[in-house]
Image (cartoon, rainbow, N blue to C red; front, top):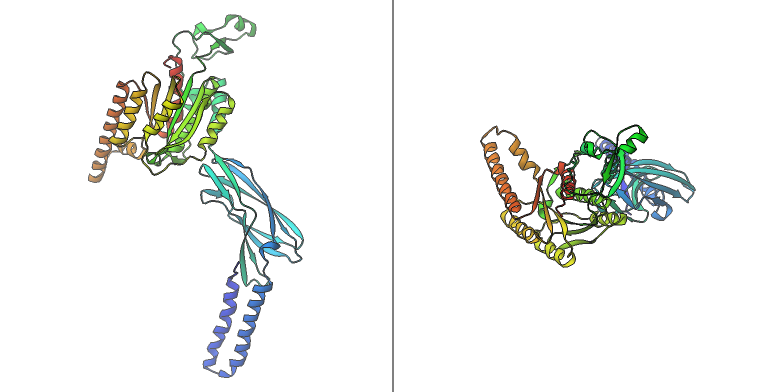
Length: 444
């Protein structure tokens, strides 16, 4: 690659230029200045030709995990090798997408001849998806410090950034200790006869006295209650809208700003995790102006991995969502009665009308649950009192939209669909609570 001049070269060039001002007083200096100029040119040329390495003179072996987790720091390990006799002064930085952040932007390394140097960077991915990492960018300074050459070394690699699954471990831990209320999940009182014994566990203050196992209590000298299993082997179908309405951004429960689609994916994966733990079958349809992802409904622990892989690189598209494509696909592929959980966002009559019509058609054959994500800016406008005329008009417009959404929700409920109208930061807890309520009341 073409070398770039350094500040030192500009200073070296400026020196004869300044001295040439002396020619105004005495032109006898002209031969000496010409020789000086020639010397600068020869030095710069020799430094550019002989003082810089070619790309093949530096090699790098690098390693990284193929699967990353969103928001978690991952290590990139580089092993730089200089097989030649000359040493080089190098500034290195990994070639990563702009959606990634580096713990330190660059690292300076002195690489002697016939030696190796180990460099490690910690990189954090801020967006899900499939990404390409293009090795290492190195900037090499020439012998005299007059030039630098930019080189990219190392083979490119593809990595997959998955959603952060920390919430799944938190749920499993809190479920074992019956403390799901700490993450906003509300348990529902079961109706009817779930009589299949599941396990014994310690008593908690919200357990009824009728659930105490007195024999186990006597043996352990502390209150022990019985847990019973809910109806199992039912089907949950996740419909995830990836159209333009899901491209808006909103802060989540952890304060990180993400798209509405990101919030929907997090909630969908948590719901899948909980349902699979209940031995239910879970499937997926993700769509925009057509079906983008299809995962047939299955049970078992491997199904969660299939869902994660299907959703990890799904991004919102700036197209109008065609709900009919998803619902026709559902009717063609899934005939068994299912809880159909549709994650979407509506802000206009046309979109809402299509969604309402297709959800109403499901009633009877399936149990539809519409999960409507709220617009953070819209509801923030409703919560704050207007301070001027412009604020008053904005609040009035927000109230009009909120009232219209209320009418849409009321119409959906009259037609037999379940509805959750929820802020993105509360989405996961509300969706899981809604699923547990359906299971407890045997609605499916």
